[in-house]
Amino acid sequence: MKNKLTKLEFKWICYDMGNSAFILLVATILPIYFNYLSSSQGVAEYNYLSYWSYAASISTLIVALAGPILGTLADYKDHKKKIFLTTATLGALALASSWFAFLVLFIAAKVAYSLSLIVYDSMLTDITTEDRMDAVSSKGYAWGYIGSVVPFIISLVFVLMYDKMGMTLK
Picture 1 (spheres, helix red, strand yellow):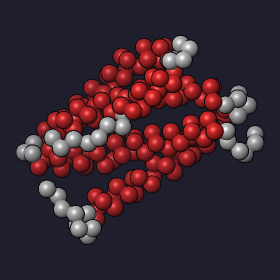
Picture 2 (spheres, rainbow, N blue to C red):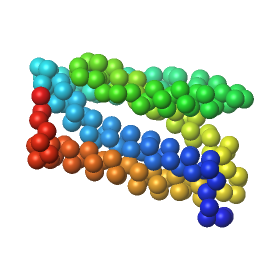
Picture 3 (cartoon, one colour):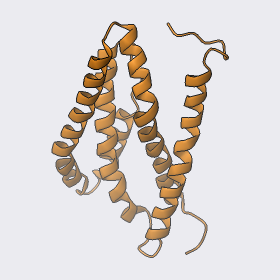
Picture 4 (cartoon, rainbow, N blue to C red):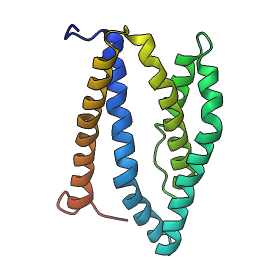
């Protein structure tokens, strides 16, 4: 395999970096933020854990039901890119200030993220040749790890050193 990536291969790998960062932040930083948000609005800790678990379960159930349908639709000509862009965009929703609105947006973002992966994974056959597929996929996997660590470290700095940076929790 040539070492030089095509433009499409590079874009595919970049999305792997972004989706890896999303899932690492969802698993580590967002629960901390949700705990802060919900406790500051009077939600008991045992309820916070239940609500977070329910939200994760709801998003998984929606993906389990919608995934096969979306995957089938994406296989139709000219649908893959449209579906991918829609789900990827929806997965990038902003954070909310209310704990309940945050959970709703979390569910929507997690569902859209997971559904985008169905189409993203199937795009590999569209963006590269069969003899380059393993190498491109491996590079995506490797760069995904690297790409997920950078925003995680930045987030950790904010979480652990917010007071030294002149920030307050309100």
